[in-house]
Amino acid sequence: MKIATWNINGVRGRLPLLLKWLARAKPDIVALQELKTPADLFPEDALRKAGYSVVWLGERAYNGVAILARGSEPIVIRRSLPGDPADKASRYIEAAVDGLIIACLYLPNGNPQPGPKFAYKLAWFDRLIAHAKTLKKSGAPVVLLGDFNVVPTEADIYETISYDDNALVQPESRAAYRKLLKQGWTDTLRELHPDETIYTFWDYFRRRWERNAGLRIDHILLSPSLAPRLASAGVDRWARGLLKPSDHAPVWITLEDTRRMQKAPRKTASRARGKK
Image (cartoon, rainbow, N blue to C red; front, side):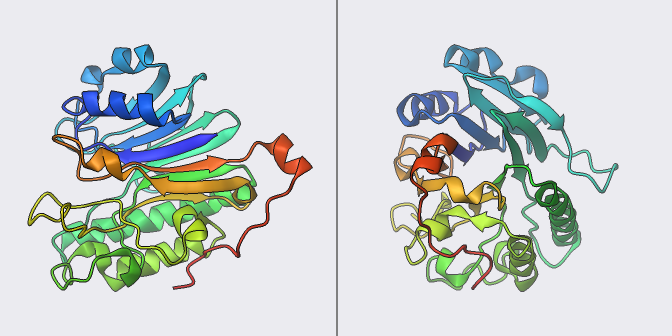
């Protein structure tokens, strides 16, 4: 099974790119962020024609999240992150797909910091940590994925001082991410590629894509019950190089089939749970 996440940065404007990527990458489950479209204008028909059922939350101009599934219908569990009924931003959707719980999130950016936007980011992160603890405690196989808007360590950003004041790299943001991992979640890219330079986002400005001046802010985390099935993980950098792309590239993992695991258990490295 192949599972991916992509901050599409405008689903209607980049629908041709999304369809091209779906046809080439052939993921089974996809989490999308930054749809930037009202719910009634989401391109459901085009995605169904491409073979994907979909559930989504839309919001005009900002935010928006969706879960796509090939060959099955996602069953929505919740359409908001618990903990603040007054928060109406379309940033979290959770669904059951093929025996998994898929939790798609778009964590607040938090800039400029310090200030109310950074406070909102940290409060949202606290709510995510609390809900993730509940999900993990359930023992269910959970995939927690999306744009976390946090660079976990210095190894996840190009050598620069230009981001020193950015909310994505602040000690509080990184501490929140480490706290989440310490619950027992596996950071899949770092689990399988502990020492590689891996980026998932390249700003449009200052030729950062051409210079590979990137950041790793899009993550796929697995619950302890699901982590032993992790087989491979990567980033589809080619999608960032297309004409008029999103500033993010798709991140993906593959999971071993349970029946195959019973025949030949996979040996894995120790889990990457906030070691850095």
